[in-house]
Amino acid sequence: MTAGGGPLAGIRIIELAGLGPAPFGAMLLADMGAEVVRVERVDGGNGIGVAVPFDVLARNRRSIRLDLKQDEGKAALLRMIDGADGLIEGFRPGVLERLGFAPDLLLERNPKLVVGRMTGWGQDGPLAQRAGHDINYIALAGALFSIGGRGGPPVPPLNLVGDFGGGGLVLAFGVVCALLEARGSGKGQVVDAAMVDGAALLTAGVHGMLAQGMFREDRGGTILNGGAPFYAVYECADGEFVTIGSLEPQFFALLQERLGIDPAEFGNRNDPRQWDGQRERLAAIFRSRTRDEWTRLLGDSDVCFAPVLRMTEAPQHPHNAARGVFVEVGGLVQPAPAPRFSRTAAGACTPPAVPGADTDAVLVAFGFSREEVTALHAGGVVAGAADAD
Image 1 (cartoon, rainbow, N blue to C red):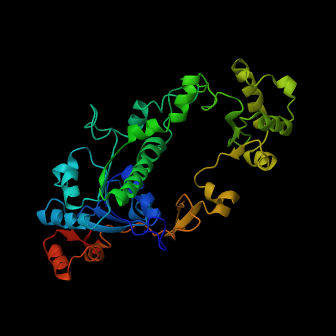
Image 2 (cartoon, helix red, strand yellow):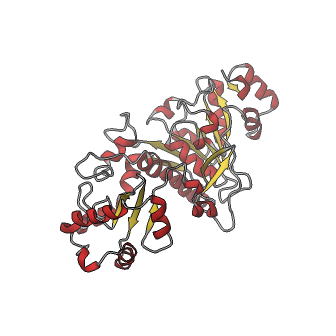
Image 3 (spheres, one colour):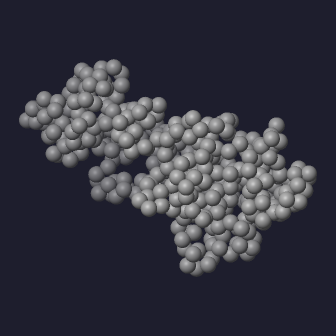
């Protein structure tokens, strides 16, 4: 966990190591001070091809390597779960049960346990057992269709909407909600977090606009997906890009003033029939200067402007630097924990642990004797970092 505490200090979570959204959810909890222990395969592989120093999603955790194919390994994990507040897993529905860790069994042993389950399609439904990835979940949720340029296909927004926004973030939120409820009721429960559910949830505001007739289901033709000339991305003279978000009339009036545009000549910006011509006019203007020149001209104003920065550039921007939006952990620059708290701020992040780096210490912390730890090593049930292939 982060050194120095945080709002979730004192919470103990077991994470069955997996891919993408579940580790992201576990990272969010660990960022906020929860003690999260990653249970990794005894062979030491994480299955994603990302070397340990670069596995940002694994930061702020301790790691144990445990063989869940052996009865002794299953028994060891059950003992750990008995002493935990929550469990996070990202397997297909039914895998946890086949491993011998059905939620009903776990809740019988530890009545206050919160079991966070991360899947793509959910624990039930016609597609529950089908394989899938972010692009599939956001497609079925209706989130992907309207993202992209006019005349082209939908463009996946990296894997931010399904895996992370609709997946791991919703998982972490659900786990915290259940942990809070358990404090009063004394009863745990299962959190069924599905990326298709979360991706759909992220479109809530757009659904309202769609029902009111303020949003059309197309690409590059509405205010939010680049259709409006006053809420768009423009290319600059150097091939870089800037963003304009002058939605409110007063902000757009300021933009026209800064660009030297006569409002009477520009036309009615609220008339979509004029948008193509207005966009061409603005595009020609923005192509006349470089990104940095536009930043100097517009960056100190309320036109709602920002340069389009690469991920490698973002940490050096003065605003991001001043707020500490990015941190360096183990020599690797990465996003800092968020949000921020006035009283229970999280401390410094710790780098991802080598699989099995904390095997012995974790077992002892969960009540295993030194003799039991030695026996588990002798039987190949657990392994430390030095035992990796």
